[in-house]
Image 1 (tube, rainbow, N blue to C red):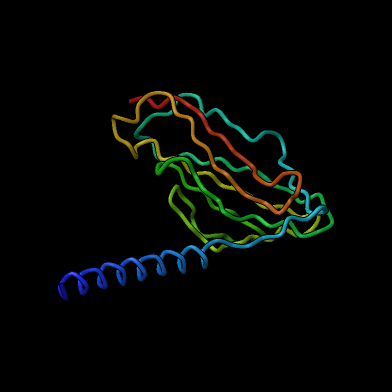
Image 2 (image 1 turned 90 degrees about the horizontal axis):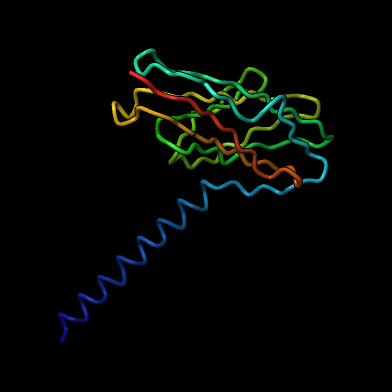
Length: 164
């Protein structure tokens, strides 16, 4: 009977430790941002680009999108994620670069764009990442959360056709 109690106590303790670790890690990596009425995210031109035909072995392709703050409050950019491991994203604000973000990235990074200023979102696509199984049409997304009440999530799209 005592062996069952010891095993049960070990299981409960293990679950408590794992649960606490998950809670602490998730609480420290997710920024808590308050949406503002006067922070305005504006994307010049389009939020999508078709690369057309992409040779698999010609190296990475990069596309930059400009995100302007047309409001009077500071615009915050955070929780940047990509839809695939073959795609990464990085933000540049006033010549300072963010970490590189990917599909599984959890980051506490928050970029601040002052009123009237802009950020550059660089999206990097590696056509060789998946090898021959990655040949054919691609459709990748990058999402950027903002504190703009009317534009809380920006989604950028790149498409193309990977060939040998």
